[in-house]
Image 1 (cartoon, rainbow over the protein chains, first blue to last red):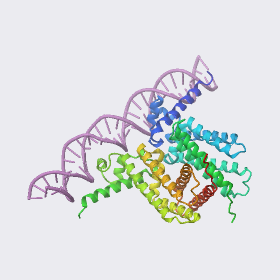
Image 2: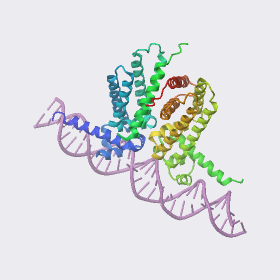
Image 3: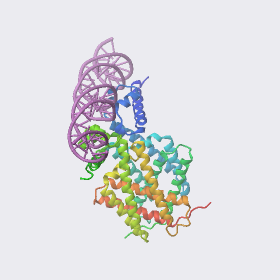
Image 4: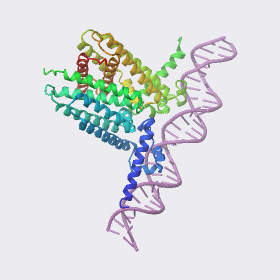
Length: 208
Length: 208
DNA sequence: AATTTCGGTGTACATCCGTACACCGAAACT
DNA sequence: AGTTTCGGTGTACGGATGTACACCGAAATT
């Protein structure tokens, strides 16, 4: 019973995060009241402040969690990466589908709050996406055949790819796990990545 | 003074729509109270019901307006369309930049409510985007060289293009008109469209 | 000229909101 | 063993919210 005190606090904190995630599912963080969360968790409203100064700070914690999950996803992508582009594409989409399935609430949260959330939350999400774009750009730069590319073109390509992956994730959020619709979105994502790959292979940066 | 009565009602209705657009700018429709809107317009709260049964219905009216604007944009794109792909791309991006500039509030509204709004509003926006994808697909199908394409591949390409245009619009929303950042986003959008064009020109649909 | 229609008014009420404040009891520390 | 720390409690407040209800006055209709 060494850590009973901090354990208990951590347990309550988790319960608050989960409750907020569940309750904001149908609406938004900005429309979520501290009292709803407290009631869902089973604590008195004022006890909320023992964990977060405000709902917005709760939101920032959720974003951090979600982006950690996203970071896991990206690490997974890199680990999966081999030499064959087709394999990389298929693997990437498979990982994305799986991630969205098992962390559905987190990704739905990000999609919702990306433009509608509190200012701090929006900024945190934007920074996370920019980070993903930069990481992808450096990964592509290390691929063979990328030496003819302008740094700027690499960046723009990364933005295109990440953007289409975000769009794919958003589409996946609307499909049921294992459904035909989900497979359809996944198949479309694979095709789109291949189209972009074909575009990239035939691209010549204008050095003018 | 033929239409004094309906004129007045229409004027108030417009004021309500504009007020809702302005007030939801920092937050969301679902966090917007009927009383705030009424106060902003300068009418008593209960007078709101003379125009809309609820805030959600107000939102549906705003979506319809915004999608009309979007439709104007698409018509503009088609009108601009010539033969040279480069010209079409530059023109399309220019129109998009201009539209987002002059109807900033409406596009910001759509970006916000697309995933965070009331269910009816979300569906209306999704339908509008699907419509845009279908219209683009039929336009591309009429282009020379599109005969080797699968119908499904055409659809997927359209989704990719519309998706990247939506992403571009979302990025434009965060830039000031005439700023260097705005031009940077526009330039990236042109490059991305060219990359996709290169991909499309070298694409061979698998008829397997 | 008499009547109807209807956008807007004003009051009223139950409910929810964030949060300030004083307090409790048990785990943690000394 | 005595004291401190701190997560959680309970009460209480002013303010905002949606909406029901009765009403008004002028434009529109008859």
